[in-house]
Length: 438
Image (cartoon, rainbow, N blue to C red; front, side):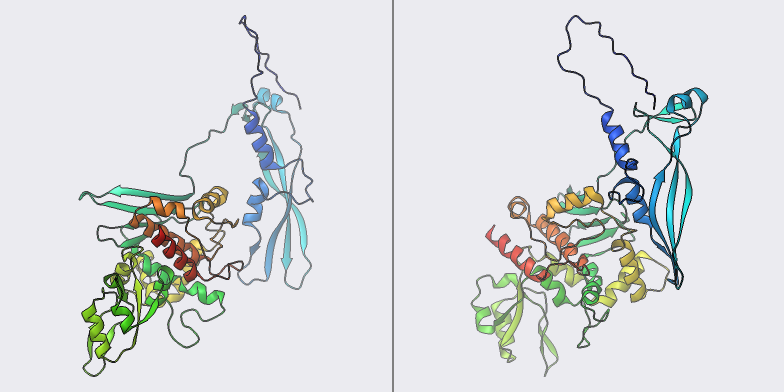
């Protein structure tokens, strides 16, 4: 291929000591890596560039599953004219692109055929493209980098509101932000008015992932109880302690402890102590008078009871109600059903063709959350350890936002086959313990 070498003329008296670097080498090497034209078509190319694009789209399966169109390889032919002749003749400098496909039908042999996909523009040694006889260059544009972003904004009343967002390379944005009442709300696709719901509602809706990973029913356990209850959500953030009445009375931080269930007087039908309300010695004595020996409590010291506030405000009480509430907000006008809501959430966050963090997004998430997974389409670790260096430097609301994000990551990865055997609750109990030490 002929090349046009520009002769450099130096009019200075001082000789150049260092040869100027080739500034175009980055563009040319990047495009060569994208095409991988030097590799043989039948040999397995690296999962980058044009090869990654074809592998991302294919295979394509028919609705009945009887016919599958799969990708085999691609081949780049020789250009008809060199780039200098294309400049003189006013033509486009490119080469034909041929792709080999495999058509697999049920009960028949696979058919292989090479298909002409079109002309692929080629880069000149100068790092340019020749389009209709004119040299064109690719100009890089700035865009929002995928990954995780933590932010803090000031409300007009002077209160600092912490928030975070998970930005994928392709797919829906996941944002969470505190309001002035310390309630953590979730927004999808940057539509904050219509698609706003509490983060506990979102965690309830993701309970079906645990059931699918264990091979159980979608919305009920084996014993018939519903999933996505308050106790299951509390296990993600706190350590549920079962104490006797005498042990509860001796606690020094008793006002920071709350019940996870109502204490009811069965004879009179009265609620003696409500769930998620701070305990006191007088309330514990009233519970003891009912003949109750043990109570289940959680300590809200790590996050000042932010998740407790969300649970009290949450209109949904189980997975099915949470799914219908989310679907009602995301698809107003359509009849809300649990099956449609599950399918919608799977399409938004768990379909590799619709949701992809990208290599940059995956690297940033691994760096900030301490992950080691390489999968770009979803979170793949069930238990995420909270880096201690971030505990010491963040405020309590910022820590709660971080805990919520890592809990969302743990819940979203429950269906992954390569998940850790450690439960998500134990991981967060370790983080709560480390936050107390901090």
